[in-house]
Image 1 (cartoon, one colour):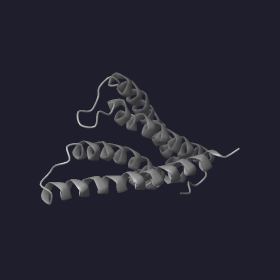
Image 2: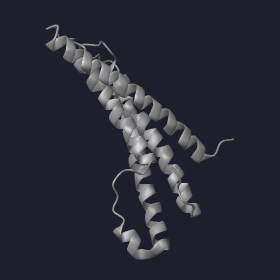
Image 3: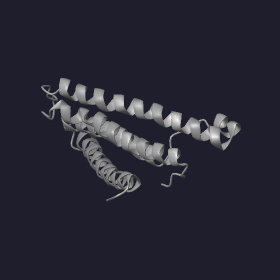
Length: 161
């Protein structure tokens, strides 16, 4: 049975590959729009909407990768001054607060996706709940990564990438 750290790493790897694909599609769509608009003098009516929705997914999934890599900015002056024991307690408290926030993101993201389930996007005719699923999916991934970090902090282990 895989450990929590292994599951976290596998999901992060899958998200990284997904981000590469989303980014590539976004580049192609925007480049096609620019080419069509300025060279062919014909605008692709759906490209801006698709690029916007891809950017939403790119942003939320990208946040999970940055969090997994511990690349978000942090203020650690207090932890450095109170020593390793106090720093560990502070880290645990921080992870618990993050877990609460990411849990709220997941629950309310699901509720919001359900709320907009009947809405259709104007250009793509895409159900809006598909776009809004970026919130609960990234929230759940962030919860998983936070739980992994929390368990490592409780056990006094270092968190490897």
